[in-house]
Image 1 (cartoon, rainbow, N blue to C red):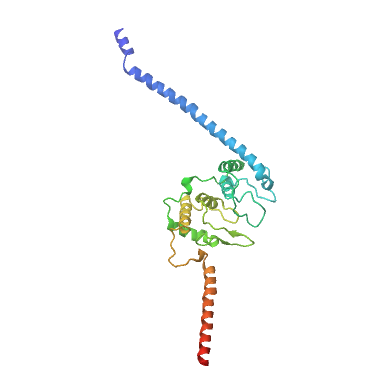
Image 2: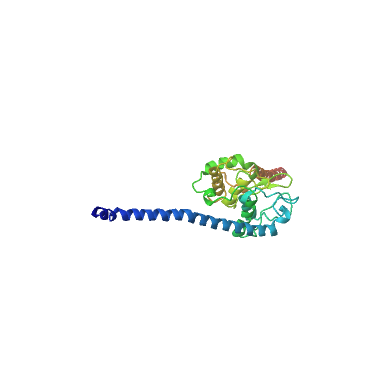
Length: 269
């Protein structure tokens, strides 16, 4: 009996009970808490989609169809993803004021919360590029020189080597990139809006996009130097040639007239 009583009062018994209690508590937490958090997230997402659907019906359905299937006035939005919505609506291009060769950037009429709701609804219609996070589009620590190489190889043909923009065909144009936010630059590369080709991560990795964003941030800022002197807006050889023709040839003509006048006066005297 003494041995049995001693075994019941063994000090490790309390430790075993405590560990068992902790295990049961952890199991219960793992069983219930994640599902509750997941349910909350699902509920919030459903609410965002529902609110986005209401905004869509008012501002977008007349051109893109009641279910985003597209009409003769607007393309289908099934599969464009939340990134395309964030770019188009965030830059004010959508809703469009009127049809045309290209929809210009204008003042945005939606709040950030409303854009997120619209993006959630469009994303629910079909999988597509997702709105990037700040860590994805931030140019901090990016390679500016590499970004310049990538930009001149893939983008300068339309946007100019300094991102000043340029004319295309049939009334279309590549917009200037000065002042465009890093987030919208990333989304444009990701989704390829309007006449621009898309550069998904399989074609241009996330790091390369950050390098391009860093290059544009530098070349259009006070950090950029112009060792050649007057940059003439950075528009390239056309503007420089026009400047040279008008002012250079004009100066030569004025000089020629002055020399001729002086020569004629000298002969008379």
